[in-house]
Figure 1 (cartoon, rainbow, N blue to C red):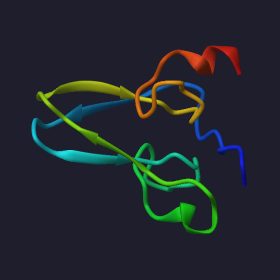
Figure 2: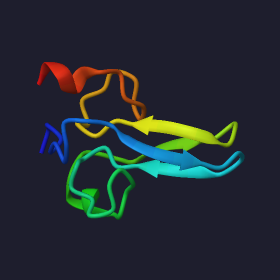
Figure 3: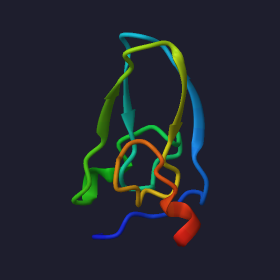
Length: 79
């Protein structure tokens, strides 16, 4: 698997908490999107850590093709 699956062609809005780490699913297989559930174990993908510096709403990439993972950069509009 060299191309990630696309769980949705829009970002995931998540309220994050300052100081907490979140592990973003890079393979697209996770059942707990946008976060990793270990489904990548038989792929070349690894989850990406996002450490929240502030408590706020963050937009995690849902298409798994962002050039700025784990955050959305609008790439989904070109897929």
